[in-house]
Image (cartoon, rainbow, N blue to C red; front, side, top):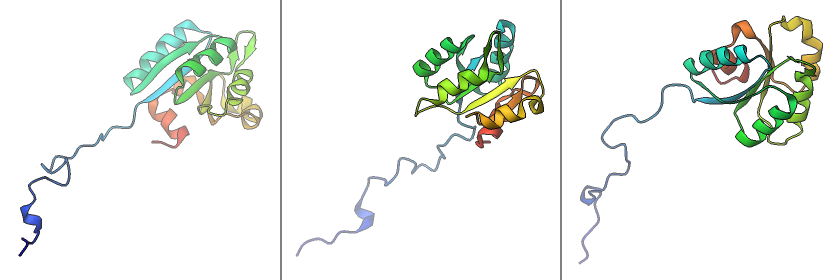
Length: 147
């Protein structure tokens, strides 16, 4: 007569978590961003603020051409774009980036008030607007709906 199989005879646990220790990350997932702005001092300050808030600044760009190159190369989770890039427009950058079918969400940033650009923002392919004075990881996550 063949021996009958019983669950108690198995010594291998069904899960790696058998020891009872929870193994998940309670913190929000780290976001990777590219910041597009022509102001070097702002880029430095923004990087410090964001990285202290759990957002990795994967790269920066100061022009439309640099932005397209950085975003294509780095494939960030989000792109922060200054509305005014010297002689260029952040809205032009957003249009060019949106042409990529795998485009990351884009958030326009500015020292100017959002209502000043409300119509342009609404017509653009961006996800939202964030005043530079309110730049933070939590503000970005709130706009992206990941907070």
